[in-house]
Image 1 (tube, rainbow, N blue to C red):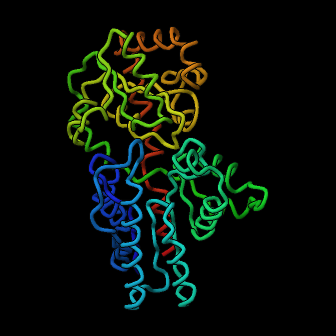
Image 2 (cartoon, one colour; image 1 turned 135 degrees about the horizontal axis):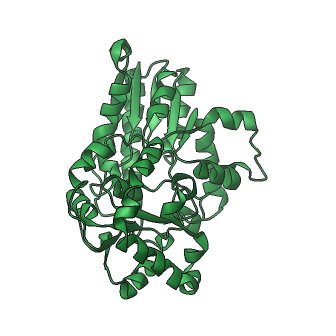
Image 3 (cartoon, rainbow, N blue to C red; image 1 turned 90 degrees about the vertical axis):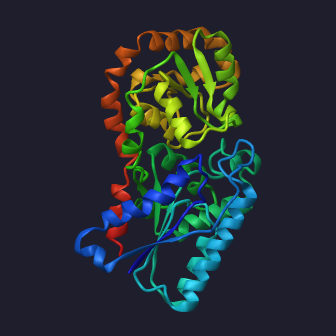
Length: 363
């Protein structure tokens, strides 16, 4: 039997490049022992992609479709060779991939019983996502997302917040009410397979700290960079927007290791990798009490959501936010004491054990 990883295109400055390297290794390790002798792990790639993403976006809108089209060609070729067998598992590391429909088409018409899993990151059902903002609830996109959901045997989500939003905005639409039993079977909350992060970041953990605050997010409307830039004008600390410079991953990690805080005012977040990266290297995350942050972070590291619900709300609560930031920066050792407990709690969101076990039980 074979587990096929239909991966997301690797951009060197994103975690996607790390996934391309580490996920196959981690999955092979999870399939260890005698079981590994009977299961192969193969990656279905789409070749090279543009390393420059569209402004504010996670990927290149044209490049991602070229990548997925190349993946589809390889999948179809494997079917034509007779390589796809009963019991094989296809793991899509980005569930928003229309090729899963073509995969299901071929498998069903050829009578091959495969299992398919997809890892959801975002979509039109999230009003703050690019699709949500630019396309909204257009029939074509909502129907496409619902079809992809139905095609996957296992729909993976990293947080309960994401599951609830998906259910509320897509599955509970008037034209298709999904029963609870089906939802429980098809929807799985699992940590993302990022066990590699701690050992990679370990060398940056004990770097000398400076009075530095980082904005580690994309420069996009839903990240509210205007709030951070305004804070930078009034705070007595150095403030850096990481994407203002073309940092390599190593340069970013070095910068992260010397900062005392990473700041978020995000209006979209279904997980939040950069804040976890900060916590690993003893950089204090400060996040709003909303989105995925609410279930992931304890009160020490959250501020009231209303303070940055919009730039207008921020102007009302600016003094309060500045006071909290200043307190953390001046009393960094106090906040640092609780950080190991936080990283221990966050590990459940950044470990793929449940994902691996689901695959193992299927093959």
